[in-house]
Length: 492
Image (cartoon, rainbow, N blue to C red; front, side, top):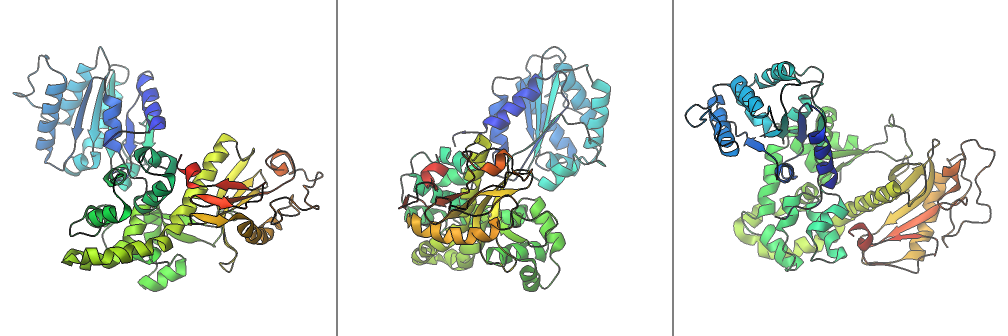
């Protein structure tokens, strides 16, 4: 699998490496997200020892670390084959001695697996760091997939609290980053693949860019033991806590029960703690209308990972029959269901694109939020609203359609009507664009309003709010002032 992107993460690691007497770094994230590949790339050209924990007894972990150190650091006086490390103090002291004259990177990967059989290790590390500060050029990096364990490692009550100079959380690729792994596909097809498997590098690498959709789904999902079938079970088994509620909550959300009370009724229990844990694990996202404050009770939940949403929402319902050999017959039904499923991932990809534009300044200055909107009755849904300024006034309303081609003028008309209710609550906004995409004659920002600064004057200095329309391939008849977005823009 080719290594692509991760430029920001590599830059952060490089800055940590070059700093004077750095304390340890911690890298963490979900399984399959590319942590090990990132660290292997970073270690290239550097003196390094890498050890991956496997839940062995302490003696076994130390013996394996001894073998890795012997290979990486040949020619030293101590023969680690004959005299392997006796304990973690011995190992750390020896590696520190090897770094007295020049830097040495030591990676302890799957750190939670090591701690499982050496629970004293965090305390040992704390004592080691205290007694060797400024006396060695050892660069110690801890890495792990158990998100809860890796975050707990950095909490105030933990032995290593306050002793990390770099905490790097690795996330799946965003749409434009995932596109780098799918160079052989059209932007529209990249959008489809991303909507199914998300931004996990391994899943993207499974997609055969020379085969069509049916062949890929047959190979990856519609055969007994197919990779996506197996992976779905693995995610639930390894990343979701044990017990009946987490899996039940995930299934409920994937089936469209996105409100708290709907989830509660479905599992017949209070889901608050379970939802909090799933949000912490980044398997679920808690959404609220972008215009609301953090205290708002108007919340909804969505599966944050595209692959998990695909597995739970579509694939798992056919799993038993696919394992019995009926996958080829199920394939056309699965493909026919994709358009209904892919709308939500496409909307989120659209919002992610708007955030990316906001960072570059392409949407104007003082952007403070990008998110969906819906009113108290769950109606009047708008896929994306962009807010600006301290008063959080709307400057852009967006609609995304999972269709190859849409009529821009028709969508703009409907979007304008929905947007009026949102803009009415903004103190410095008196109107929204007409269906033509141009502001009506009475569209102004109140110059006497002290909040009506540069952010209130819109994107180009005039008092306008823009509309943004999104489809996979083209937006026909779009009003000229509308921002148009296609898969070619999102997956560039």
